[in-house]
Amino acid sequence: MPKIAGIVNYPQAVSMPAPMSRCLVVLSTLFLANCSSQDVAWPNLADVPPVLKTDAAATATPPAPPTPSVAQADGVLDKASTGTAALASRLAQHESRLTMLKTDLARQAAAVTSAVDAGRGADPDLWGKVQADISGLNQDIDTLREVRADVADDAAAGAGIVSDLRPLTQAPDLDAASAERTAAASEAINAVLARLGTLDREITDSLAEYERLSGSQAARLEGPAMSRPVVEPAPEPAPAKRPALRKPRPKPQAEAAAPQDSGDRFKGRQPLVTLTFDDPNLDFETRLRGLIDKVRAQYPDIAFDVENLGAAPEQLQKVRAMLKSLDIPLALYNAPVPANGTPSIKLYPR
View 1 (cartoon, rainbow, N blue to C red):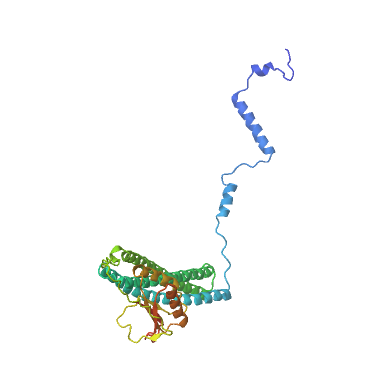
View 2: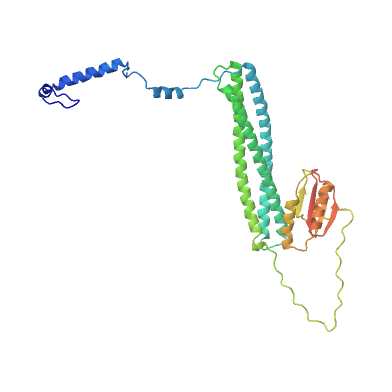
């Protein structure tokens, strides 16, 4: 039989095919022998795959932090107790200020609404008074915003106390006395935080109410019905045959060198502006100048009688300098400090 390089022909192998069952047995034997020779471990259904072992380790509960000592716990609790007491005291002050402010805001809002209703088209001279009332309302609204900012600061401080207490509330083996103090401290600060939250919501609602009212009344005040009626000029008389001799225009009254005593000069008169100096360093110039500019737009020839009721000389000088810079005539008067003891300066239009 002819031979081809590399291949040997065996006619017997071709003419005698092995049964399929024998082939499977041979292949299985070879495969098992190969696995055994390489020491390959067979998979076991009881084994956990490595990936699952890694995930289980990652999600395991971290070890609890070490329990603080009695001395450490006492230090944290003393600091929390002092801070909570201070916040509770400030909370009472915030609540008292809010009660007073809401009373003033309700009174001023009613006065503004009544004055605008009465002055629309009936008495243009009320314009200045209503503008002053709206200015006072807006000052109280600004104070309300300051109270809300103080409440927010105290809420942040209370959250810090809760954070300081957290290692004690989570300690598993805290001694009985410390655990009891921790529970009481947590209850106290949570009660303060709850009251601060209620107060913040009450302030927010009041701000929304009075900001809306102030804006709506100011818009009504600026409306055409509150404008001063336009008086048509009288027709000029026919020229005389001989030139009429006119009296010289009177010179404006000179400002007195020193303030005079007001006495009862202002009895029954309504000031356009009252500057109250609970704070001797009150910064009022920007808002006062804006108000005067609005009044002069309606009454270009306005003048003021300025009454000083115990305010500091430098504050009176600021008012005087502002009016002089605006070329507004003025006269200065002194009066005793009012019964409530609060210094003030009042500007009466004339």
